[in-house]
Image (tube, rainbow, N blue to C red):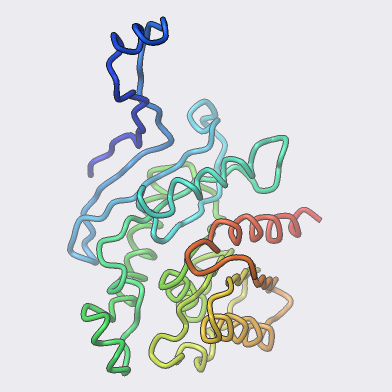
Length: 278
């Protein structure tokens, strides 16, 4: 296992001498700015190296006893969604905002998201567009039997787990909710690609669960198929919902598939955790 710090150099492209000549300012010191850790380890399930990015709450290192809920973020590379979602988590957990509890964020970097986030399809166009498709069962096993135990061993976690998935990640999060719902307590599903395999996931009967669940579904103005499928998922879950389920749905009419995630996650935090405080 390899671990490094996630850093963003505060380097300036011009030299300090040039800067001093132009502004009269002398740089005393330049340091790296860290927001977390990057960990790479070998997955026995996937037979490949996998990388995660981990954001730790501000007081994590100074408080040796406190345990924290974990937010698992699909598409969690540094150049994908990790930085802005970790920023949201930090902001929403500030004491003067107090929207969500301080949380650990685990961003799962991709190797082949088209393989990992999709189940086998019978649709010939899907197979042509996604030649490596069909590995979601193996990836879910990796999440359940390797990654979650690893995170619980490495960090001071409590028992509360959230998953965030958008697009194909939303498809995977929905599949987990349907097949293995007790893997997570809160499901944040944004713009899910439920068109996959001719919308077959929407015809499945979800596995019942015995623990409380929060499910948030958000979608932007993304066309009839995406919007219709997201609403169909919400209605399907409504029909089978028990007293253990809290369901939320949001149509972000000013957003599209590319920019819905950030606002949807903020809205989901407000709804899920705000409702829990009442």
